[in-house]
Length: 518
Image (cartoon, rainbow, N blue to C red; front, side, top):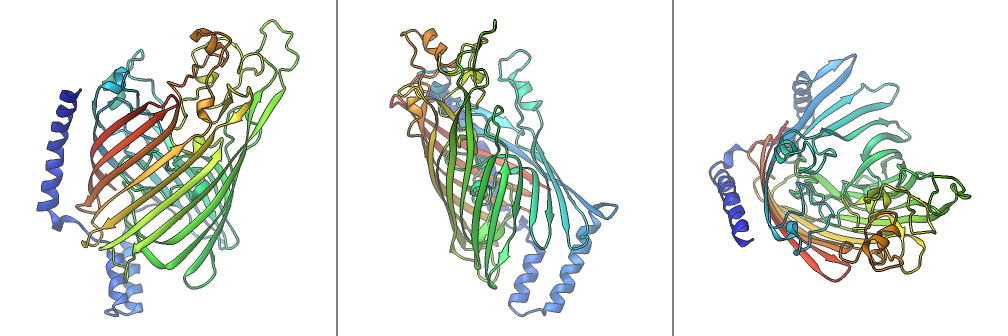
């Protein structure tokens, strides 16, 4: 394994060397934001407000000349090409780490390293804005990437070449936003409003989706409005009705929260690996989510009939509380981007909220993700077949009751922008996520054989060797913008998974990525 890892390191060393040469020899390539320059001139009283307004309007006219217009609509196409070179000392992950477990070292995947080269994280966006009509502004936004659901490598017709070069496109975001003087309404697929998701993401290289950072999108209808309390203080309440946590659910999820921001204290923030560097104010949010998880309690289904309680349901409450802080520790002065820094902190606790974290299942697989083709029941003779995603809820082998899986997470992240007008930034952080009762969700059958244990979970296999109870990560990275379009980044990342039987597994990743943003 050391020989393979060394080979991967050699391959990455060449790419890292290229990035280093570019950083050292091309410092003058990075372009600036013209509006930012105008703002600095205005703040230093070099130009007047009238001169600033005229210059800004001229820039906007030039920008609009590059837009496609139809019936008064402004239509912008955008996106980015992302080319990833990724080396791992295990075979646990594809491009996105998420909150998935590191494979145990006594498995083939956990004992061998891998090297990937991929463009699957690239994205295409469309942004449509309508002119203001009767005081109402409206916008449609759609984004498409190439990380859709695909068969695993080795499945019939799926080679490694096909997986990397013929990926499935998927809807990343697709919503419309209506802004009125009274309230803003968003309907469609976007980040969950729980935790004001995406506004407190770690702007690291691995698609931000690493352990303990909430990161997921789905269909919702939300109401919000930013209220100005003083010249520098704003308050934003939000209420959202979002997708139910399971296909067999009968109620949606409900989210409510509030965010307070102080705009007199700001620092640059890049919330994703491809995001623009822009000023973000000091802010804090508190939000909560409530939902219902359901299981059929009529016992195993009987194909020949005679089942008296097919529609009988057992309910358990899912809930979550989140708090986040964006803190400028070296705030911007007069709109400057360089020599600034910020810290992001987030804490979450709840039950039945695993889907808020990308890829989180705790290894607790339910019948829909098992191998059984029969309706053998969910929890033996007590619970019938139930469709619910892994990690949300299951039958507790100690109590025999249907329970929501409890999840607690925390993360802290910091970024420093070098004194080159925000063209180069470095950062790092730590995150951990823990489940206090996932280890109790084993399949305790009536006998010692795996077949009997699997039958008690409707075909799923859950043991203390497959269930994990903690995922932790720490990481460091560096980004540089050569021009507003051309960006490169280097990251190192460690992930440790603790299984229910006490065994730890670790993955070390080195990643180099090049972006072309448009």
